[in-house]
Image (cartoon, rainbow, N blue to C red):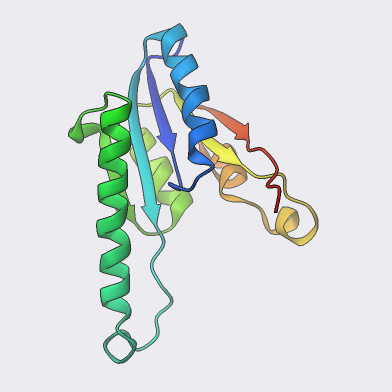
Length: 143
């Protein structure tokens, strides 16, 4: 059974649904849990002119605060919480390797049409991972 689960989260409201699945998995497996959130770099406009550096820094700070709160809720120590900056798929797969995760858990929206053709983060992780990947189908939004 799984010994180390890596939860890849986008820290949106959908995260709650995935968290419940991870809680259930942990109760069955007693696996160690690590959590990762990746902040994608903003496009390379004139950072100084547009103040994008400040925005990116703010996104990183907010992500760190959110992931720390999530870590507290799930009894995950600070050394097992990761906020990375870069391409999402690459960073998730690197941390999965670094921590020797044997399962990556992430949420996935049902995609259709162009977004399915272009691929999603969950799909990219699935095809690039060296370990098992559980994609949790997120509930459809009622908007």
